[in-house]
Length: 109
Image (cartoon, rainbow, N blue to C red):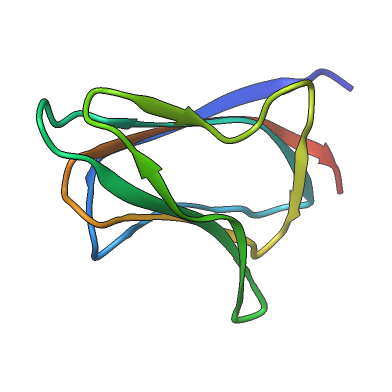
């Protein structure tokens, strides 16, 4: 089966949070999540989690990101497997976080 690489992007995420993606149709592998603080002078705190069956499972919670910096959540070849109905969400304490997610779509059904 061919591998279908996909990307998801969200801009200016704040305290209201952002649903970056709701996964459908089988299993998927998240291979990268990078969140950047685009503010030139203020830091922010970041949380990234997956909602499964109404329960939030944090990948990172309240992690500080300095102004102009970024945070890579997945490294060293690690992958996060998600399935149909899982929801990826990002929240920050200020409205200046951009998120970029890379994943492999439909690794199995």
